[in-house]
Picture (cartoon, rainbow, N blue to C red):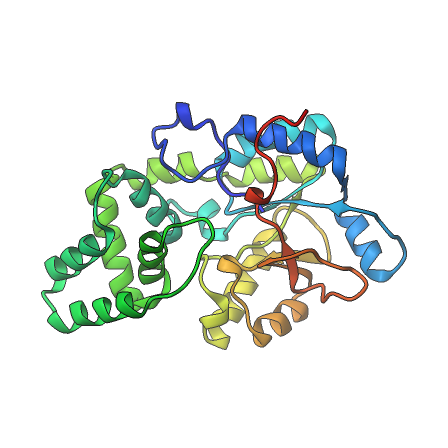
Length: 306
């Protein structure tokens, strides 16, 4: 499971949590020696029981970043490796920046030593001067015990508050304020530089890459109403139909969030495979194709192996 892939030393945002392109190349070398790269056809055949693959692996790339077209696609295309790419519809078709990415770049732009808890409290107080809201956040922080292997506790809390804990309108207001304060770039230009466009996705699809679904607005499907989920999944399928003429598609759940209705609706709308963020290895003989586990890029070596 990959996200940002770029040379950080050349980036305007060197603190963004990304894998360096050179590290990605080293991982490809390592995986090539220890695993067998599979195609979408291979995976579907294995699930049907028609084929069996030892140490099979698929490379997946979430969120539709321009990094994937500029830095990943040329490498995979040259090596004849199929990658699976999952762009949110709105990231490709609008000039907007997804809130999840605004939060990433806020965190990458905040000065070293900034207390993230105090920053949240100061921002909410500046925008609303609501003591109840301040107490609400403080109590949440006091009881917060969510563990993330790749972020320190304050960062995980900051993300949780702004991704799903507060009401949507308030979250958007806070994120937009902080983005304007710390990043301060033109939204349209930033968006066009951050995400792929549909012509690039069509080129990648025509070159043998898999373009799958990642929702429209990149929301927590498992926490959304049934009507919201239907709308998100429908928009995702309509978007994918503009890129290829497949009858079945692959869904990658934003934030790894889904529930029973998500699985039902995806199946109904022709998504025969679904990728989660659950850490694990998928067994095609016993696993459910709509809840496929994945491994994070951090699970593999990032340096050249002797």
